[in-house]
Amino acid sequence: MIRAAFPGGVTLLQAAALLPPVAVAVFARGAGATAVLAVALLTALIWDLVFARARAAPVAWHSVTTGLILAVAVPPDVTLWQVALAASFGVVLGEQVFGGRGFGFLSPAVAALAFLAFSFPGTGLAGAEPAVAAAAVPGLVLLFAAGLVFWRLLAGFALGLCLATLLASGALPAPSLAVSLCFGAVFLLADPVAAAATQAGRWIHGLIAGGLVVLLADMGPVNALVFAALLASLAAPLVDHLVIRALARRRDGRRRHV
Image 1 (cartoon, rainbow, N blue to C red):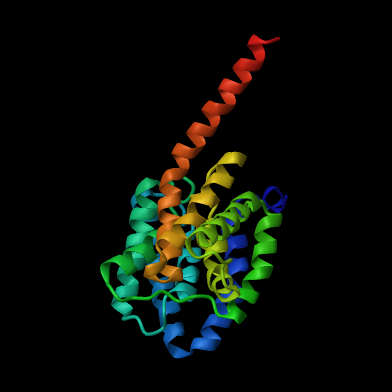
Image 2 (cartoon, helix red, strand yellow; image 1 turned 135 degrees about the horizontal axis):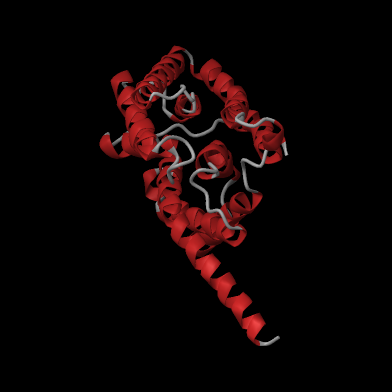
């Protein structure tokens, strides 16, 4: 896998996957999106530097990806101090307090966006325009090849979304909804740090998130996806625990019958 060929290059791969949708979003939304990008990146990098100095460790630059995700998901008209506050919350409490990327269980970008939507009612997060959604596809392919996106989780999410929508309205999700959720599904829900670790657990993780998006639909599709990703990631360790216990019991049952 690409991840094995480039040890330590996970952040570089994720940043490369994010560059096309970020570029399209900034071009389409104008100066406001450029300002959001600059503030989100600057805030995230400052916290990287602060924690690296406090730990006497090299700067990891992981929070670059958080800043890039915020540049796409945050509307261009959001007040910039709110962007800085949300980025600080996500990087510090979603990542750095646990020891940095890979040691926690939350996506810092999800934590930042959930904080923004919860703390400032009326803030509708930006959905992916068709051009942004299309620009996310090469990144999806890259991350899948690198083993940084799990197809079972995304398939489970699509299945959960379709089943929950059928139960709620008797129809399948509109194509426009799928486009709006495309970027968030790849870069928020499927963040490997917050995803379930077992194969069966990834199916369940995706199913939970898809169902929650429909349950929380009154919040707006992107806000619903953010909170669905947050709640599903909180449930992921329990899901993995239950899956492992079930597999262990199945294995022990086979041994008793040998």
